[in-house]
Image (cartoon, rainbow, N blue to C red; front, side):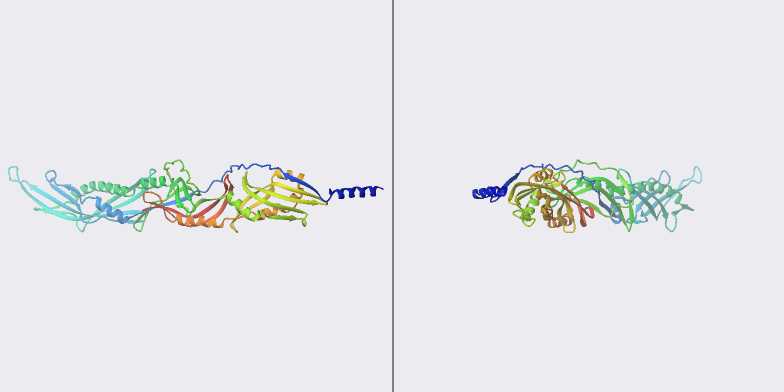
Length: 478
């Protein structure tokens, strides 16, 4: 009896067309999980050492010194006070050489002397006198040590002595043979110190270290465009100065200056210059690091990420459990949330359970952590998962979407190639830093840069990938 009643009820429903297939439609509420990006503490970036080699040819110092030092070094033309006149002149160019971290100088001199001999036989006798002139040569030799004072002044310490030629100066006056050395040597030694002081002053003027360094320090703080196509800016923040000992070898005075700085290569708008920093005191070191490390940033916009994913996923349909469940992606937008990428997918789908078909449409939100795959030179996403709001909605309306492989398939599609962009960055470094003119004849030169991935951050405008570029970086005055 019950069976007949049930069949009768079904027949009535079929006749009315109400049990062809029962359909339920569910719309996912557009519950935006928020797109606020969390400020991420950046790791302390490594400092780069920008070398500033200072080298001065000893020949150039020698030439300048010969121009500055007068030919007549000493003149006493008064015969009345001590019966002796003396004139000391340079007979040739000053010779300089560098050896064993010291500077050696030789000054060839000619001594002209005029002496007077006077004799009175008695108080009432006529005074007899005779004058005699003589010339002889000698060489003054000096030894100079150099030191950099805390205020970047080059201080030189010269000491020296002189030697006579084959014979000491003498001349005959009547029956007397007078040795002039005891008279002349005190005068020469008295004039030797002023000559050494003049030598030190000339050396210090020829190496205006603080002028060079202050100029370089100031100019390093101004951002420099190194690649107009990539719109790459070199931003440097000098922090400290290191100096190696002065070397005097092979007739060259050389000094290595290391400027420690935070060096970044930034894309986009010209970065604001940092607050000017005064030139600090230097630290003395034995050696400088052989390479410099530059922090290179490359921005990947959300627009680019969205465009790549739309090519892969927009309009694509997914089928699960032999067609029991189906889902179509109509649109996708990539933004950021916290420290992760956020995906908003406009989807529609359906799921069959017996005679009942459940339809689904609305937004699905997924989030995952971006990372850089060095092997493929792509940005990828790991740990892709539904947001909490989406998960709650799917538990109530489409639990099957939580159980299937849709999330995994989307994660596999999330590969963003950046090889071309990185190639552009490398080229910008190689060409832009090969020779960058700063100001006032100061040139920045870099070479042999390699690029390695470091970290990646989610920003308000997209992803910012940080790389470490390692190579040589130096400053040169032209």
